[in-house]
Length: 319
Image 1 (cartoon, rainbow, N blue to C red):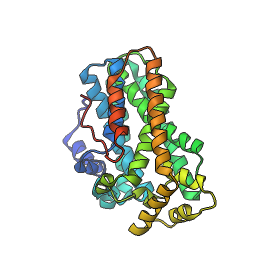
Image 2 (cartoon, helix red, strand yellow):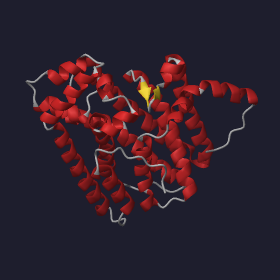
Image 3 (cartoon, one colour):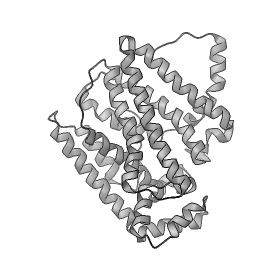
């Protein structure tokens, strides 16, 4: 990122203000690396130099860290990657300020790096913010009115969350390499965004290994409607057990196990696996249809992620 000269006093104040967003870095990687690796897979086509990829990753990681502490507040998350969430340590007011501070630092660094392309940097970042907070707002809306969204509603949420961040990441990959934007298929962005979100939804409820990293089935504690839950509730509209349990969060361990067992009996996990496989095929078909050459990197990622859904995948970089 660009270097900005600061006084010792500014550095000291900044160190205090950024403690909440720095806090989560102590606990190691999470799925932000999976999002990053999907962004990096586009470089098989874009062919940006390594230093541009590194700058892009830094911007993406900073944005993730700013938004994740806000997510934890809105979801009432107690643990993040095995550590107390930032707001549990530093309080809600300072954590909110830290997230906003980091967001504006990202914009400041973008503008310093942009040189004569400041209008592009601002436009892309504002577009991302509008889409992201729209998607987050819809997720909160359905959670708070305790109404199960349709799959179309779910797709709108994903378009504003994973899909928007993925597209911005690819735009940043080209921007940092000072290249013109490639006209990638919107369907390709959408399908990869859905894979990222549905995969996260699935392992949160179904992966035993994931439960050792976070609280067991913490999506139930947050009261959010995830992909397997939407299937379970909509496929059995006369069975109110899932919806009733979601309403009385947080759940005890036995209730969580019952919730997962009900989803299993309703075929919701099997349905989720089938949908992920369809998305995988769709992504590879869309990639082939762009006439930009094969992308073995993207193919390998999809195989790694969807080939063993009982194991959470971590990537350390974009090599």
